[in-house]
Length: 141
Image (cartoon, rainbow, N blue to C red; front, side, top):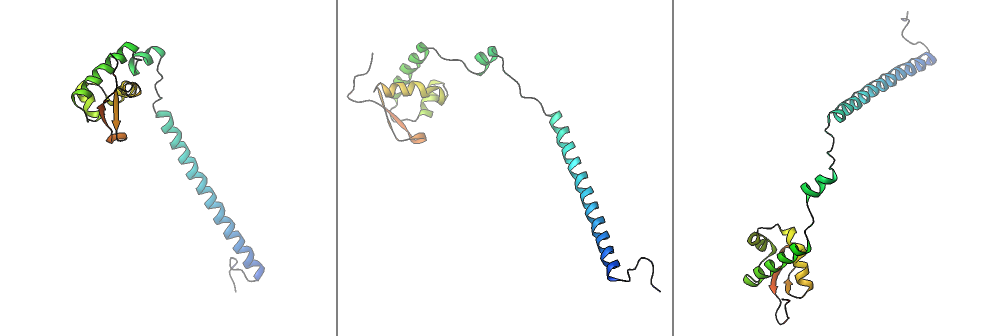
């Protein structure tokens, strides 16, 4: 005699298989929902603890970040830069920045002005650029 849980007909076997698969899919779905809930709650907890970005006030922006240099300051830096280029032709911008005690980016604008005025010429590109006083051109002054 067969036990009550053992299917005896093909229809009963099919029904048992369907019930087992349904139970398996339900359990997998439940586990996936729990994993998602756990992942999202952990993400929310982290985002609540994450520090907010600090917003700069207009006063802080003007002073702490950077300030615009006046035309006179740039002109004075141009003349100092031209003197260094004349004293050490063929050097890189990094060498000039060390000599003048300025950062390379702070010398970009004065150097561009010197080049556009025809007072300095450049050989090479980017990090390999070397600067020379312009020969045969009248310098301002």
